[in-house]
Image (tube, rainbow, N blue to C red; front, side, top):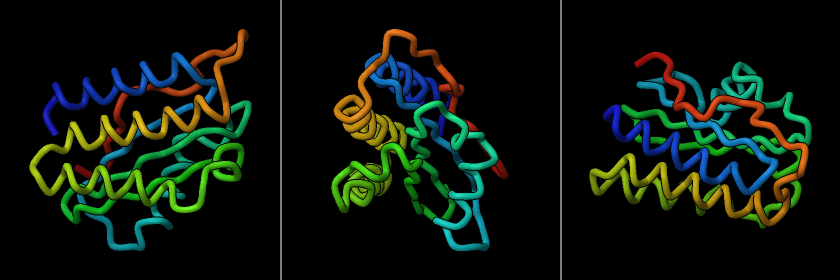
Length: 140
């Protein structure tokens, strides 16, 4: 992803979070040798996403070289989203990746997640941004 695409994703995260108490992170890595959900859960913890006030953080994890995506939601959001929702987010982003539009795929994924966060965790008057909006990168 280009710097401009990473900025667009960070901007999409900021726009989504202005309407919700939830937190969204996007993390990119080149290649992993373990199962993607297991590794994404590890990254979720490494990024401190389990420490949000309402336990409503969502990680969109992308293994770039393997073209795999995982979405991990903390208890506060995972318990209320419809069954299959995370798979819908993954399918939308992967379709964009296949068409050569990774930035658009991640922006769409962030928007989808943001809409669910707004629905179940609207912005609170005392809300603060608990986690960085920047795309984090490991092993690229």
